[in-house]
Length: 327
Image (tube, rainbow, N blue to C red):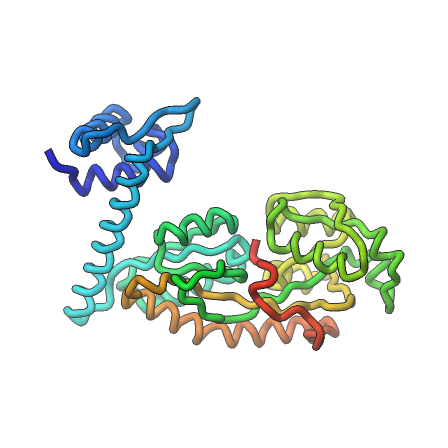
């Protein structure tokens, strides 16, 4: 008995979902059927591939080896599909893009226009926290990754594609909104609403406070950009956030941009791809699409800042690798 592509596909889904029941729902199979397929795969390979700990399914070391092989086979089959499509002169195939959470304000419209221009390409988008995105990047599960602090690695191809400006926001009646100069005492006493530990905007906030000799002591810790905006509008404190995430609230007068040193900060989006993997025709087309579309988005960001009397300061932190703003 030899492993089948169907069994290897099941192993990938089980690893993604963490349980046989969840994987069965995703694959529209019954749990007993899926368990039989996993058992046959383990028998074919001659070693147990998983164990159950609590309610979570965990792969054994042999299971991890099989999963890695399954993903390499899956990736190679996708590349074969793209190459054959290119030989036929037909624009078709699949495109998988993954990105950090702030990209939800940018990528859906960009991907929608890409699909309109390339209707033969089946495209998907996955939005994840940065740590999980890095896991997918290390596993090579997607054709491209959008983030603002790419990991340092010679194995990666990294291209800057556009701006993801960071701004400091407050409720319109916050005292800093009427304060022409920022006093040190005000900085040390300010309340900040932040994302979870490890998030890019939280790191940036802490870095900014450190410039004044102050330490970040969060007033609230929240798990999404939408929750951050609601908390700031409710008067719980200040927040550092992507300008892409707050343009509607700014235009409606529900939030205001603060005129404080080092903001807005011109953080940059990067498209990351594996250097050792030949990009598919769809991935190359999407890269070109981003380079074509982002200049207009960047111009819009400059216009939004100008309407609020702001521009990028000369001493802003400009290195996109310093802090990831896209969490």
